[in-house]
Amino acid sequence: KELHRAFPTASRFTLDKFVDTRLPALTDKEKIKEFIIDLKMDNKLDLSTKRAIYLQILCVNRPFNTVSAKWSDIDLENKIWTIPANEMKTKSSHTIPLSSYALKILKEQHMFKIINSPFVFPALNANGHLHRDTISKAIRNLGGKNRYSGIATSHGFRATFRTICSKSKAELLNLGISEETIESVLAHKELNAVKRSYERDKATIEQKAKLMQWYGDYLNSIEPLGI
Image: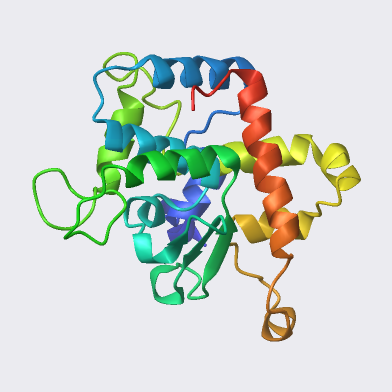
């Protein structure tokens, strides 16, 4: 016991010291509005990087899945993006419907598609795709050096989505959007092993499409996205 007190585990230390280890995320409406304004008004960022940030915000995937997106996985006609299981943290394929906003971003990016690259966001000066740190750095310095340091992160936009959905639960339920639909969009793994062994999906593609369009509209109502 004395040894454990003297040398606590990292999780025990953060719990005892009330340290919040979660990644910074925008959850206040005014801060979200401020960020959207800074993003759409920015004229220094490479446009491909800027579109990647928009897609990260709108599709709430894990940052790696955003920067490594492949055109072969995106069906612009049917408005569907399917990420293969081997590229997902959960090791299960993930299908996400594209809102009108996300679709417009991808169609715009497609106009500048590099023929020999399979990636939606190819690296600027090398083979491969945009690095996840590139969008992290761009977010941090949006509107000024380190302006959003400790305030917003690329992964944190998943928390932005989750928080907004939680606060809007009554409205979403009226639209037929359940907690399972929200979790499905976030591609969270079912913790109950028995349930996980039988449940193949938490929500229909129609439910997820309704949620993603609602979310895009919600952000656009805070401040026009400029898309």
